[in-house]
Image (cartoon, rainbow, N blue to C red; front, side, top):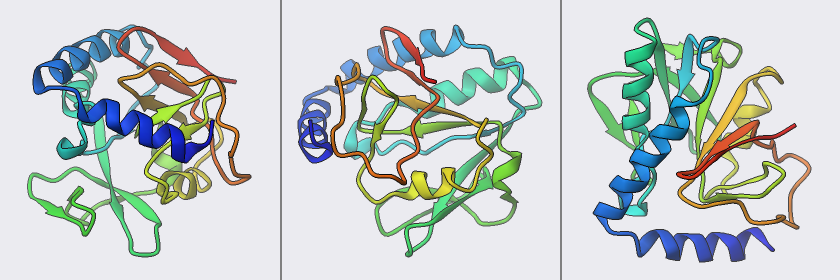
Length: 187
């Protein structure tokens, strides 16, 4: 399937989810997250969920990780107009960018080589770990600047599609993905 077709289909499915449905799916995502080994994660990149897009509740996942890893440092992305982004240490006060995404204040930038793991928002993914986002390439550009061994963990309410046929040479696949029912590890 083409990314645009998959994106349209999955966004329509997400739109049909009620708040109650999302809460149940988030609880199931947390169970999958708890099954993973987090011992090598000291600095985590996460994301602020887009509530109007029914994105998974990354706050619930991060809260659990902070509980089991009290020294965990968490960073969130700030997007630039040129479709690049950088991660900054979380701040209590947030800005909202032109796409309606919450961002931390740009005080303490975290270099790409310091992040151990990034929780990655996505619309969908395939059985090879190729992700479908919103089509701007922010994460692929950022991943190109990261060490190859960084864990890139997608968070999805839906299971993978068989294969995305229009991948681009600059697309960087996930290393893992969790869904409410299982977790995936990609080579």
